[in-house]
Length: 108
Image (cartoon, rainbow, N blue to C red):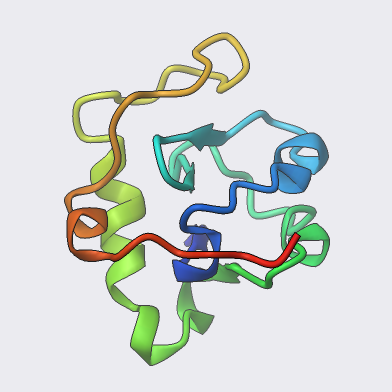
């Protein structure tokens, strides 16, 4: 089991979760952030700092956002487990699911 970042993160990428993650397992895609499931230690530090409540324990992802569990895993199919997001930086791609998600506007 792992944590999953869902729809509310799309086009926001606040990154407060990245600062809290003790194992540097939150990676940045083009439109949202993703948690590397093999690197996540399930500490939960990321969940309470997310300003839009986009992070859920895998079993607790709301039904309407269940596709984001697979999208989080899919993001790492080619990327693998790099062993730390900081050294990798922002990626220029996202999971295929995001191609069908219209741009989101967030209140600043």
